[in-house]
Image 1 (tube, rainbow, N blue to C red):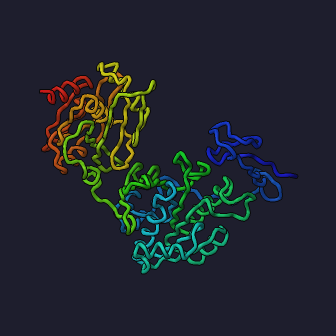
Image 2 (image 1 turned 90 degrees about the horizontal axis):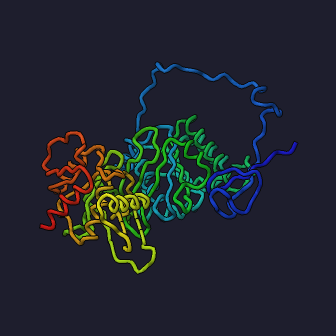
Image 3 (image 1 turned 90 degrees about the vertical axis):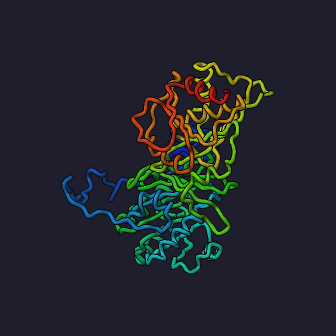
Amino acid sequence: MAKSSTYTCTACGVTHKKWAGRCETCGEWNSITEEVALSAGPKGKTLGAAKGQRVELSSLSSQDAPLQRSLFGIDELDRVLGGGLVPASAILVGGDPGIGKSTLLLQAAGAFARQGKKVLYVSGEEAASQIRMRADRLNMTDAPVQLAAETNLRDILTTLDNERPDLVIIDSIQTMWADHVGSAPGSVSQVRAAAHELTSFAKRRGISVVLVGHVTKDGQIAGPRVIEHMVDTVLYFEGERGHQFRILRAVKNRFGPADEIGVFEMTSGGLQQVLNPSALFLSERDKPTSGSVVFAGIEGTRPVLVEIQALVAKSPLATPRRTVVGWDSGRLAMILAVLEARCGIGFGGMDVYLNIAGGIKISEPAADLAVAAALISALQDHALPADSVVFGEISLSGALRPISQPENRLKEAEKLGFASAYAPSRMKTIAKTGIDVHKVDDLAAFIENCFGQLDD
């Protein structure tokens, strides 16, 4: 009996009944590949007819030994992982080409191996000599890391079973080839099978595995989304290749907080961790400038102060530009609409540019008030005091909604020398700090309070 086939889009993972040149779901061309369906089981029997082994059961009251984490020795990486590496865990690391994934993981492998741990670095993209060249540039030639340049999954698993390392790094999962899957390396079937085999092997043998994943042009990890469900932790390495800052962000973590970030700086000697990112992001902010506002944000469990920059200029175009870097463009459109409808401040016929300094990306709604302040400051050419921070969520009615962890935001601002803050009045009681907190009810009151004082 011939095996049935399905056709899957490598860009979005949607299954089609037949091949087509263009995926109707995501619009990508030449992204649909054929997948051969798996067999029905031993001797053609269905799962219900074939006898399996009994699965061992346990109750919720069963006591397990606490997991003993192992520290890499790189504080920012250990923070993102939730306090270190959990044994028998599977970690997926994604990021743009050339962003520094291999550099970071080689540094982590060297730091881990120097603690007496056994580490294997398996590369399917580079030869062992090329990895040694990078290690020499990073001054890591003395690190006892074992290297291998191989793509055959069966040979890799056999080697891991014999060596029994504490940590193995696979760079990258898209280059692995499983000989029992009838498709080319990098296809959806190959990536799914390789990820399944490696994560299952890690759980059975108690080996921690780190998988490097390529990303699509939209910034998502290439291949089926089921890979992200297989692993315990998913990390994204963010940043611009022309910028020195790199952000390692946890978007999924079964053993720690999600959305935690670690900050690194790319130097000639590799990636250096930044222990105080707020001071680094604000290092070039020396004097008050119109359109510049400091936002006190929270990334995971860490308070981070960043500069929000806005520029408003008369547009020569029929449709003015709305350019955003590091924030949600849809959120900017909402803020502009609220300013016009609730406060009478219009931006029609004006180009609006918004940038989050330092290459960091912000997603929390607490940045709404800081963005609005930057826009008004740029429009009126009035600078806010250099020693003030702003945070708060704006509703469609123009009211300011309370946000989480105001005390941590204010403590971080006080530590860096800020003297005042603008925040929603509906927040819970804030512990007394050395910062003068100006509480406002809505956006109109904030504009009158803040920019009225500047006009005096």
